[in-house]
Image (cartoon, rainbow, N blue to C red; front, side, top):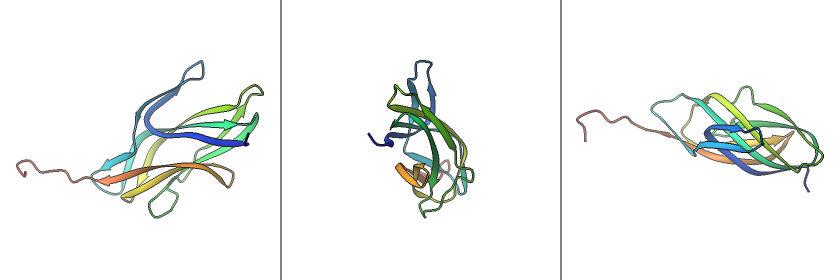
Length: 135
């Protein structure tokens, strides 16, 4: 088994981990519609499921813009401790006020040190509000 291997990476409206370790995910999405730029997405969650060897692991999440720039000034850093009898780790991380300064394809990256474990894309779309009476 690899030290860490990403199996699932989701962007959603809300997620929580129950007492029994199960993750509940609500409102999985891959597009964010905005009316103007820059924009801030109020609140969302990143859900990651990893195969992991027992012991401590340090992970970071980053959102990469369509032009390739990191967008999170303070990328969430997580330390997980996988028990000796386990082989998976479930992670739920909240993002507040994610800035969107470009339209196009973004990606969420999960890293262990300098190694990218995986990524998941989402698209920011500029939507023009239709004026009443203009069809």
